Image (cartoon, rainbow, N blue to C red):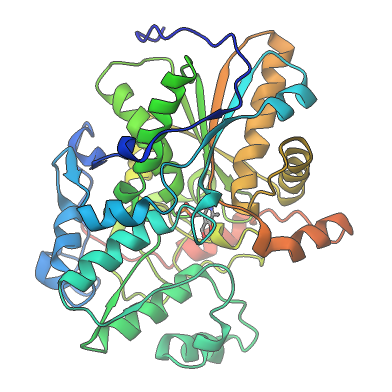
Length: 422
Ligand SMILES: Cc1ncc(COP(=O)(O)O)c(C=O)c1O
């Protein structure tokens, strides 16, 4: 039973908006509340815990400090809050259209991150990372992308050339893209590396999402029974869910279910192992303890490009190990089916990544219909699908296939795991 006693809504209000003055002033750092500290990142060469000096060629010092901080709240610099105001606070929308189509008693809300300039949650950390880099004099940033555009870069870096030598038709992976970006940053004095997910500071920057959602659900007079988010490296899920998980960790809330959804084609939590592994293909990054399919994992070219990663954020992995969150893997076709149902009912076209969360929201709402329970389900709609119309077209033409990552491939990739003493 939750200790919170918020009333349940009786009205059919659709949108819950906050003012600019309600924009969070601090990021929430879950490391302050974890029952035990996260296992330390290890040096890729020595296998020993790394220190700030090891990370200095890649990241500005302020972000290195945030990465290891155990302070609960970290103030958002004024210029970053000003930039956030371009699109934040983002709306929380009650999915009245979807509720009607599904026809059960569940109430469904989505936090809409697709209104940012990039069309997803990513700028919540990109702006912050760019800010700290500029403060410390960085002239150039290198990063990876999961959406498949790294083909041109593949021919340029040593990591990319090595991958092509092994397999001239290599479709690439997020792990390989990270190797290339790290190589670029580490070999140039004017360049640092910016990562879009996985790291603690990235997850923390995203917590503006969940903090706003909490206030908006209060405005709605509701409280969540189930929270859902998709996971690639874990950043949008964490940003949305961690401010609520905080209440579980501190004992304020007991019966909240928090579900992370991954693709069957890259099932790092549900099929991977919780061990130390490299964050990238070419074994250049520090070793972190996480759920991993092995750094040599080459995913099938499924259409949720942002979810094709072999590992998972260490903080998300730790919460899963401690049974504070759940994880579910879903197939590509039922995911697109859910996305199309959502678009028809709500008008917004979701990113294929976000559609993984929608699949599970619909399944949970249908379970409520069967049991007659009027649960409140909230999910993070991490981005729009306007860049993914080709994938929708292929789905509509019946050209998409389901792909389950084979167990023996997982075993093969896990055989390449680094040996560490910890
Ligand atoms: C719209 C969208 N959602 C989710 C993700 C997955 O990343 P993460 O798990 O870090 O949120 C991506 C990554 O590219 C994305 O573009």
